[in-house]
Image (tube, rainbow, N blue to C red; front, side, top):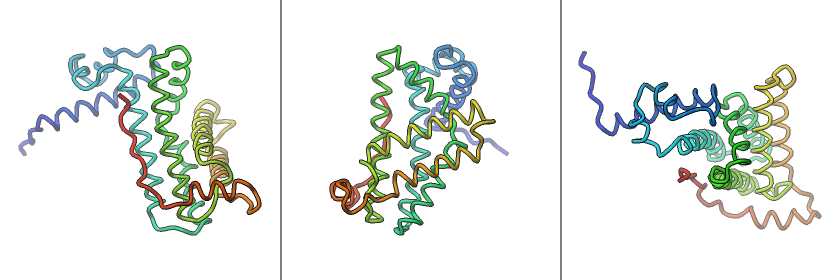
Length: 233
């Protein structure tokens, strides 16, 4: 059987994918600071030239890994929000199941933690991380607003604050599950994540609470297209 020859574009995409896979493995083993372009290129089976044909530097590659994981997570929530559920309890439970499984499927929690530590010492890196975090918070906020629009409920807090809290909690639980699994095991991780999502997203503010009117007016309106996160430059 004759092997089909890859087009130039297909070959480039294959190279890029292998570099990303190798980089993830190298970053997880050595850490971002200790990993070199040479390490990543060698692990992927390519030269440094192949690396620089696809990425400007390892920082760009690092954020591409985080961006891809974010997009993968987003697709799961989009499927649920676009699936036709409008009953608050049913939609809440479906979202909680999806959210509570993130710790298990996560591939980049250690990279996220390292990114925050690096950002404390490196202003250029911190600027990149700030841009990326704002994009993530914006996307999660849009999901919270979509839930409100679909169910006609008001969240228990401003959507952006919920987004920041949900992202921080997921990172922390994922990290704890990997560092101290004898304390934060899978059952505990799922329970914590599911409980907090239900409490923060699905609990409508009481009718006489000032948030009930203000937040509902702000977020329970025709949903706009959910935001796609562009690559960090």
